Length: 392
Image 1: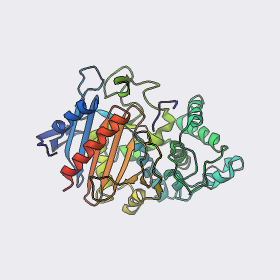
Image 2 (image 1 turned 90 degrees about the horizontal axis):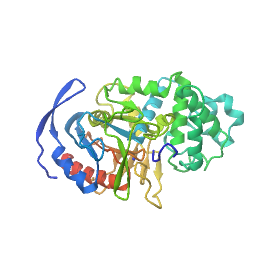
Image 3 (image 1 turned 135 degrees about the horizontal axis):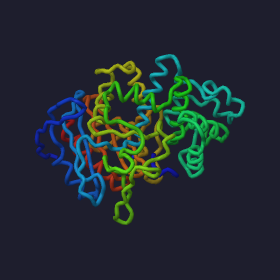
Image 4 (image 1 turned 45 degrees about the vertical axis):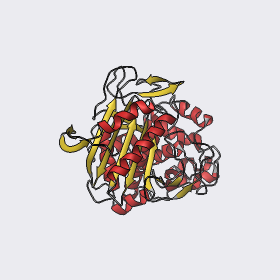
């Protein structure tokens, strides 16, 4: 997600004992590695972790929760992960498929039959897989789309009812292209996929991600919406930059996108929990907990479509080329010998990257509480250094 509500070494490290989620694990501290990036790129805070064979082997968190203050971040602080949440929505969809509640080719008309006669004809045939791979024909976020998001928040009801109202609005709008033909990164598509999951499960997406992903994976710091509490700086708050000055966005209406967009990117968690999620995915079914079959997890990671090279650099947190799977991308970088599974997430005030190398059973996560180009440059710079050091 990439707008405000109206709108992703060779350095010696010391060994540390990290206490988190009730467990104790010996791992290398990345703090000495991370600190130079704060001043080099003007970041308020930076956190990263590396996972090998399902074990966090290095982690660190440096900087301040709010620019201009001396409130140091900790290894257990929550960072916003933005569109990296999409992989979790795809996993929930996979659970529904394995349970027989949905099929990958379940269509909009099948899941919402009461809307069929009013649907734009091509939309009737849009499938769950097309929504999750950004090949549905729905448009990328634009001003008209954001107007609908804002209007959705004025409707009555629970979050599932608000998302259903959004489905009714988009069901009458023309598609940008024929389903299955082109890639167009669409947060709306993920909200609709979330609404499909809600329809067949009888539960809100927000309940399901908490009960079926956060809890079994023991992501105890994980939550939804702004990472800090209203009126408190109890987590690294997001920032934007304007002419070299950083502005902090506190928890509140403008501290994140509209919460109806949860399936597209509203989760937050500590770097250690983000690393646990990454390590579980990098194992591709080697380790518990068993949430879906290994073959299903591999399907989520398998590319569906080639992404066109953007004419202009897209906002940080959105794909920059490569291939797209189901909530994951496949990207070629000059510091890895082959394409890696990747995703980025940003609500324009935070940025988080996740990288998987299943061949080596290796994963990396990097997070900062600043959006924008400098944050993107910082994360890519750091990620190359981490991969070169740990992917041996």
